[in-house]
Image (cartoon, rainbow, N blue to C red):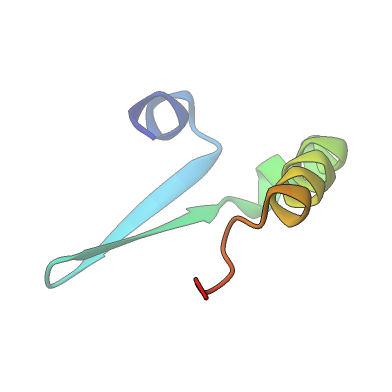
Length: 52
């Protein structure tokens, strides 16, 4: 996450003990296929789904 934050395509927002990470709109527009690839991989591997 540090590498992405320092490179610029993400921004981080702290709320209490939580840290929210978002992709900057410019990064999504510039590299749309990267986001599609990540989401596809997460779907195949079950990342982000509740356990059980």
